[in-house]
Image (tube, rainbow, N blue to C red; front, top):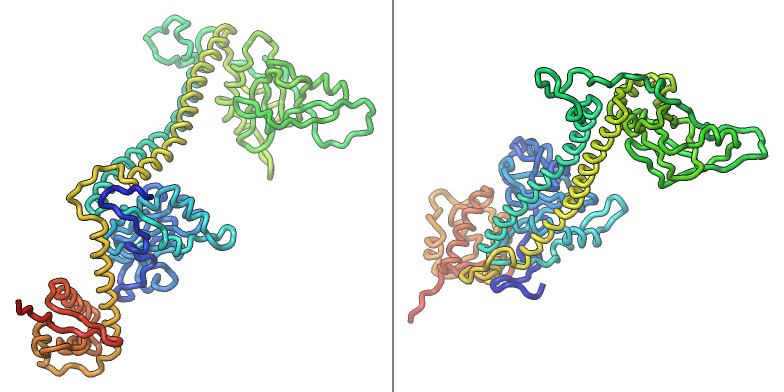
Length: 543
């Protein structure tokens, strides 16, 4: 990224973020901390859902430690590709432990955790991470070196806040849109069910009949002219050919296509894969499908019982196997789609109740199929009902297609928003913001000061053997340095303040907080001698 806005700079993650920082906490074994398994990280919202409180002693070994404000990033497949990353918030005692499959990103202070989180949420970031994964298939992980070396466009800190706020508003809108879209398939199915409920009660075509007495909105019984008839009384039902059965040698066999349970779906036919079988001429004649035949599954998984659709002559010379019934209406003028729609929707419960279940398969007999009660309206009304069903379903199919198209666009929209943010195009720049380069210089100075404090702290603990005598401690570091009138080792200065062997971590931290303050104010200067820092008061200029 070469054309960054004014005030921005390009850095490596390691310049502004500590990857997998060393463990650090001051807690007792029974103190509570938050435990975060991988499953508790929501890959969409980046929120930790389901983190649990546990005593430190239960999780201190074998888990990854992090703290409030850290960003945790799943490094293992497929959690990484799915976007499992979160900002640690509201942890018990500000400390968390979680899966060893997390990398931890801790800001040195110059970059907001939210800015980091949005950056690693980018699909491009995760795709590049996937390319450098190491390890066996199924257990591949993103190495920490990828994160440390990855470049990051860094704006001024105040602009980071504006970017994060803007991203929060925009991404929340796409999240709401995604939630709303997720409900649409269910609503479509409910609407289809309602259309069919109205169709088979006569409500869908009630405008064709005079209004009933009392202005009833829904008829409590079938309309006049409708009858309940058994499927076997209005049709001829034929079982199919048994596939795989050993046959005696027959000379005159003919190869024909046949339909299986997999071909006969609920409301449509899947003809992508059609198999063939050799049959006699009499078998072919008996089982040959005609346009308008209703196909209905006899067996298979329980949810397949009775499902089916209409044969429209898509393949010439096609028959059906024994797990698919062929239903041919006796009245050729009656619309077969009316019966098939009814069987698919209203007959499903009947088939579930009447079917039998074996270890592997469910089935329903020809006798039970024949006994299916079907509401039969006058022919003209049945034709109109089918027409209205198909108009409504065609509209719902278009809605479904549009839903799918919009659902595919949302991730692209999120990606575009994030790209704009990290190119500096999402919010305006403010020329009065402190440039990121100046912020980086300060961070680097603070990092160096921290390293000095940590090294000196270790030195103090290792070299301070004699406890300071009672009454020998001084009030503050300036008083100590004034009393020495020259260079003083950091360990001697600490002992003069009563921070000797066995001092608490709080006391050591207080010493270095004071040292840091005086260094920043220019009151003290530091000189490295061998393995230890030496301190003295800053000489007063004579000018």
